[in-house]
Amino acid sequence: MTDDNHTTHDAEEDARNRDIKIYVNGEILHRDEAKVSVYDSGFMLGDGMWEGMRLYNGTWAFFDEHMDRLFDSCKAVSLDIGMNRAGVLDALTQTAAANNMTHDVHCRLMVTRGVKVKPFQHPSLSRTGPTVVIIMEHSKPATSLQAKGIRLATVPQVRGLPMSQDAKYNSHSKLNCVIACLQAEQAGADEGLMLDPHGFVNTTNACNFFIVRKGEVWTSTGDYCMNGVTRQKVIDLCRANDILVFEKNYSLFEAYGADEAFLTGTFGAQTPVAKIDGKPIGTHSGIGPVTAKLQGLYRALVAANTGG
Image (cartoon, rainbow, N blue to C red; front, side, top):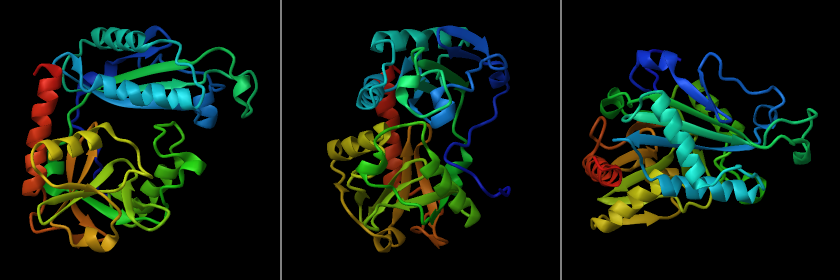
C-alpha cells in the first residue's frame, strides 16, 4: 500500500489506544493480556457474529438497531449470546468506564460459539458457552477522507446468494470481503466495489454504497448486502427530507455517470467516492452537495439519538 492509499476505516492517531482495556468473558484486561483460546470457534472457523458501534456523549448511537441485528443473526445460527440486551449494555458500560471513554469511541463487540473440545467443524464441539469480547478505541475518522474521497475498483469477487452465505449475517466469516479488498488493492484502489450475482452494483467490501444522479439517491435493492444501520438511516433521512431515494438494481453504467457517490458505515458515516475504476465521479473532487447535506442531517440525527 502506497502513501496515497487510504480506507474508510482510517482514523486519527490516538496514543491512548496503546493502553486500552478489553472485555473478555466478564474480565476487563489490558490489551496486551486480552486473549482467547486457539480452540475458540471464532478463531478456528469464523463461527461468530459482531457489531461495530459508536459512543457519543456517553450513549451508544442507535443501540436498539444494532442489538436487533446482533440478536437476529445469533438466533438464525443458534448461537446463544449468554446475556440479554441489558446484559450487553452493562458489559459495554463497564468497558467504557474502565477506559474512561465517553465520546468519539468505536467499539467492536464480538460473540463466538466458544471454545471447542476438538479442532473440528461441528457446532456441538463448542461446549463451554459463548466467547464475548469487546474492544473499544478512541477513534475519529481521518478528515482527509472528506477532501480526497475513496477510490473504488470493481472486483471479480461478488456478493453471493443468500443460500450460500447471506450477507445480512455480520459474521466473523469475512473471507469473501477480504478477497475483494485484496483484489481492489492489487488494482491500485482503496476498496473493492462488489457486484451481485446478476452483475448489478451492490456494495463495497466494507461499506454500503450509494450514488446520486440528478438529485436522486440510489442504492442497491438490499437483497445481497449487509443490512447496514447507517444505510437505513440515510434512506430514512432522504424520505423525511424530500430527497428522492430508490433501492433498485443499477449497473456500472449508472455508477460511472453518477454526479456523486458515497459509502455508508458506522465508523465513517458517509464517505465520498472520488473514482470508480479510474473514472472520476462528478465534478466535485471530493464531497458533493447531496452527500454534504446528508452528512449534516445524519450528524443531527446522531446528536438527537445520543443527547448531543
